[in-house]
Each structure stands twice: as C-alpha cells, then as structure tokens.
Amino acid sequence: MKLLVTGGAGFIGSHYVRTLLAAPDDHAPRITVLDRLTYAGNRDNLAPVAADPRLTFVEGDIGDPHLVDDLVAGHDAVVHFAAESHVDRSITAAADFARTNLLGTQLLLDAAVRHRTGRFVHVSTDEVYGSADTGRWTERQPLAPRSPYAASKAGSDLLALAAYTTHGLDVVVTRSSNTYGPYQYPEKIIPLFTTNLLDGLPVPLYGDGSHRREWLHVADHCAGVDLALRHGRAGEVYHLGGRDELANRDLTALLLKLTGRGPELVHHVADRPGHDHRYALDSTKAATELGYRPTVPLTDGLTATVTWYRDNRPWWEPLITRHRRPPTP
Image 1 (cartoon, one colour):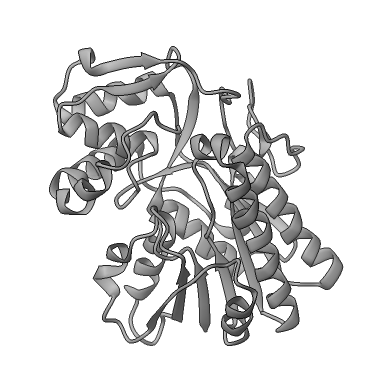
Image 2: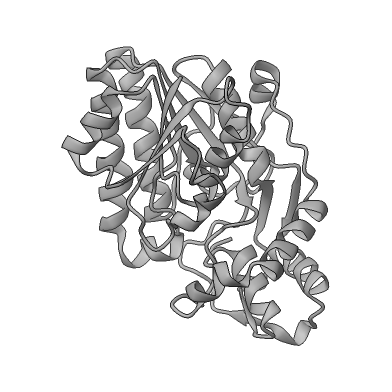
C-alpha cells in the first residue's frame, strides 16, 4: 500500500508514521508525509525513521491544489491528520483555521475523488459536539461546536461525509478524546504543564479547574486510526474514546506529583471564552466493529510522558521560549 499521511510531522501524525514503519519491511506501507512544518510540525518528530527507505517527506501545504493533486494521484489511501488544532489560537485567528481545516480538507477530498483513492480517513475530534453535561456521546449526537477550531473541524467532517454521499468516495471519519504523549507541542495542557513544572515555573489553570476531559494515549489513538483505515465501513464515523476521565485540577495534581512540585505553582487564570465543560465519547461502535480497545491507563501513560519530557529537553526547550501561555485542555 502507498499511503499519504497529511500532518505527518505533527504530534499524532508522526507517532502514526513511526508506528507503521516499525513493522517489518513486508508489512509496512510506503508512506509519503505531507506537512507544512508550521510551529507545531517538526521534522525532528520523524528523526527515528528519517532514514527508512519506505518514507518520503514533502514539505508543503494541503491548501496548494497542484501539490495535493500530484501527491494524491500516486497513493492508494490518505490518512488526514493535518489541521490547525489549538482552541486558544482559533479565538484570535479563526481565518487560519477555516483556511486549513475547511479549504485544505476540501482540496484533498477533490483530489481523492478525481483519482479514485481507495480510502480516505479523516481524523477529527470530540470537540465538534460541544459540551456534554451528562452521559456519553454516540456517533449520532448532533454537532454543536462552540469554538472556531471545533466549528472548522465539524465543517471538515461534514465535507468528508458529503464526499462519500455525493461521489462515493471511501471515507471514514474518526473522532477522538483528548490525546497526550511524547512529542506533543507544549501548548496543550499536559506538555505545557509538564515543561513548566520541570523548570519550576507556575502553571495556568483555567477557572476553578473543574472542566472534565477523557484522556487517550497517542499510541491508542493511532491504533484506532489504523483500525479505521483497514476495517472501517465507508461513510461511517467512529469514536476513539479514552479510558480515563477526570477534572483538569485532578490532572494537574497528578502532574505535580510526577514532577515533584507543590500546589503553590498552580495559578488560577480567567477562563477561556466559550470553554466547554466536559467531553465524553461512547466508543461501543469502534469496539464492536473495529476491535478498538485503548490499552494505556492514564497513570502509566502520564508517568511515561513526563519521563519523556524530562529526558528530551533538547526537543522542547527551543520551543518553549516562543510559547508559554494558558493551555487548551
């Protein structure tokens, strides 16, 4: 299989590529990574597999129709991770999110329709549903995004599903819980708080810290995406939920313990506009149809993640000088 992975130098995309290329030569696909290398894309994320002859890297923009058309034409499937994904940034620069997440996705879909791509996996987020006060969302939950980021992702989901209905493109959409792990750019809550605490700096906790999230280790997320690529039904949405749900203040307490820091470093800051209080996914469909089962408990995953940041300062120290701001949980 020849696989095009957009955003493959980002946090989740690079983990997916590294995982696929860890397979023996006769099992791994040939992979082309397309990444614009914005602030969150990093060639170093692919350093462990950079010399693999099965990997080709292309620096470029999914908003470039000619480049996208040329690349899609030579591949059997597309796994589409590329997106602007930081809620705080979307509040102040919404047009960038619409341009990449909507127009970029549509250009990829158009190329996939023209070249009759075998499968198109569109990677999305639980944030498209808005806030869930109780219960867990199924895939039938109406979309109700509450931030420019979530709205742009909801729109791109609908564009992908429309390509299935209108053109018969073999589209599968995944929507995941909050994902964490190594190589995550230090703007989201876990890597931001971890790097700050390792340096003995305060961490900015939104509001009273009661906002609740499900947490999914990046290895489990990527395993779910690969199951969707190989076994998902065309035109379907699959939830990739995490094993653990907790409040941000409790997550912060775990990170304080793992870094050996005290509660005096927790600074409560004004809440973000439109901040969703809770996300929670029902993953029964993915479990039943795909065999999806997250395997990494949050305590184990967080311990390993904090250890990775402690041991890999050369990766993140150059990044934090330009970005130490309130988190997106």
